[in-house]
Amino acid sequence: QAQLAESGGGVVQPGGSLTLSCAASGNIFLINAMGWYRQSPGNQRELVATITNGIGTKYADSVKGRFTISRDNAKNTATLQMNNLKPEDTGVYYCNADMTLWTGASPEDFSHQYWGQGTQVTVSS
Image (tube, rainbow, N blue to C red; front, side, top):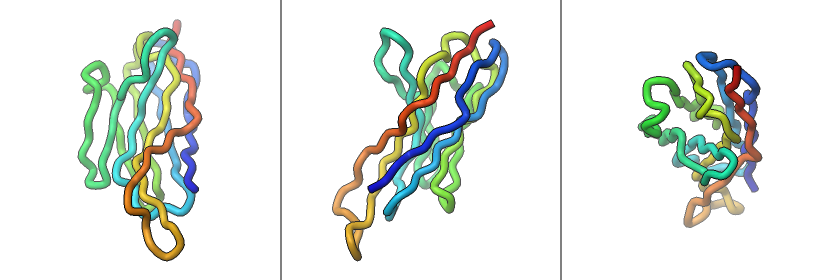
């Protein structure tokens, strides 16, 4: 069993900043990658940013230069720093993690995707 807990959403004016945090908990053997996705009404869920356990990062073109993803491997956490927010950044932001769990005394053969419950980000004047 594993869970992802998100925090940090809210309402902010255009040009403002927010920080989202995600904490993974449970019988975790390894977190291969963590990331953030978002979904706005009428649209599909889209990738915002991901980070591997080797600290490699990937960003959506729309957020490059404004958002920064980081992680603390020792604490199993990931953070998304969002600056210069725009109205089009509005949506529900979901934390995602690709994790391998312990099953008894050994790790699983394969990793699985886990999702948080989502946190609302609203950018509006």
